[in-house]
Length: 321
Image (tube, rainbow, N blue to C red):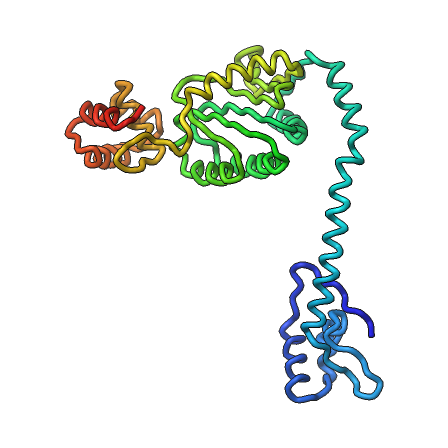
């Protein structure tokens, strides 16, 4: 008997083949002239076999399934063995790369335009081995940017990389951010927010720092980034990151308020506590007037406050900061 062909992971037995198998099992009849395609599929899968005396004979599906599983497990084991050998095979190249990196310490690379920057970032982040520190100022990240980042960041976390990401407080107002943060923190990342100005930067293994160049070292209107290959500079920038990190608030921590507040409401309360007007906060957070009024009304009811000033005071008393 010819052994069954190992099916792909999504192998599906057609309705015609399933009906033919059931008909042969219940009635004992042989396939008819119109069953050629179903017969071919069942033979390829090892579910029927040719017998010179009896014609086509059914094969126990449990036996066929066991053969499939054994073959798939064997293939998976071989792939795992190959995967484990990849690092060892590339180790000599890594030594060469590290030697070259040591020779080029202090080298500053310049990249202009999002495509070139992202290409270089993919290379650098793919080689991150122990620690990734990220500063993302501004508001919430766009959904398409989040989708691009998730796979890359999760891959780093699976390699055992420690990942700390700092966002501005305004990022809490993004609808997609909470889901993104849940995924990343579940994988081991730590994410905090800081209600202060800070610069965008990425520090990789405290040996490479990626910093923006637009408006700092160049007058170009295009997005510009500098990759600084210097452990001294990267370490200096990392220490600045650590100072900001200590003052930052973990994403899930909204103070000891009487109820859990979402990121938008926390941002509104912080604006009020800082002396901003309702209109100023709405413009800054890009909230429509009606939505802003509804949020204020909910917060007043939550904190039993009559005025905005009273609301800000009660929030501070409840542990808001």
